[in-house]
Length: 485
Ligand SMILES: O=C1CCCN[C@@H]1CCCn1cnc2ccccc2c1=O
Image (cartoon, rainbow, N blue to C red; front, side, top):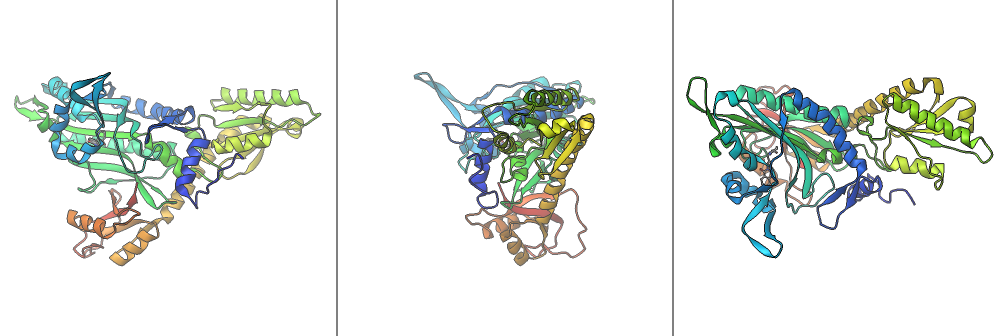
């Protein structure tokens, strides 16, 4: 049969793997942790890119392309923090039958690839700001459980790498980019996220501070980092001698940022909106927003029905709506309904003899199953309203579910209870790293330990004297905690 064999609420992992395959987004590949992105998911990546790329161009950020290969020397340059990541670095050691003199790393990220050239290109203050981005793949040979889109050994992303004369410029850009990431999630993927700052333990070790947008998957009770925007401070400038002669003729080091979102965004959307019929696509990222299906009746005017379907697709397409028809004669209408529901198409239009006679179409919503008869004269206006309503409804439902999973706690016992209830926990914290390490140690288990997700920029009131939930010391900030991907 066409349906899923696993229910989202019963076996999330199996449900997810089945949805991404049955919706024809992913094909499993013969190398573990690698996946084929089929057109149905590549189209989503392209729609997100068509939003983000013009936005960074407005910020005078230019696209470039650096080599995939990293020479070992520069990779070790970041030894302080790269050692943590070293096991994930993939290496080329041979070409054909012969061993390479020196093994070459495949980029897991491009700081060490790009920054020796930033050092060469940035000599005077007129060379600043230098703002580059690249759309590429990166490889991280991870061993923890691979999951399509969420955790794969190769993935697509954009990585922005910018250099400024002042910290103020860098700080401002970090937040401008973070807002774009929020828009990707909330305006396109209809996924609510929380903007915040990572703890010292969770931040990018090579940087000064990390900001992120954090999503949450209610079914697994796990937080997931949606995208990151780091201020690197002058750490890499020091390491790679990226300095310049400032306007006073003094030698000064640049202030840098780096920021990325990846194909992980697609996986988060699948997890949040998908249901037991399959994928549910927010209209903004649906490559097909409306699928038109003929419902011919044995002796009815079949040609008239097909003509009405084609006219409907044309009218919608001319209005800028991504519409298609399914005229295949080897599948029944019922089979087609299930097929396009599995693929998450936001709206289905059925046209049968009655609809033809009444000069109307029957629209069926993928998000809530509602059936709406629309007069053909009102088609474009009504379909546009429906698509906007579906987009908003998906966000509202996801936000309501996510908010139901947020639990404010003030004590350790409340924290443990909430954690076991698969909540996203908001707790007052003393912001001490060893306390975070202690919480990790005390919550270790086969479900994974609790960790900080972020300290939200939008801080609730913290009354004088509030104690840290874990240490009892004076709390300095509210922080989200939880298990995570
Ligand atoms: O997030 C971003 C945004 C885009 C540019 N890079 C930063 C930081 C990447 C951190 N990171 C992540 N995995 C790694 C894996 C192997 C070696 C190095 C690294 C590594 O530096």
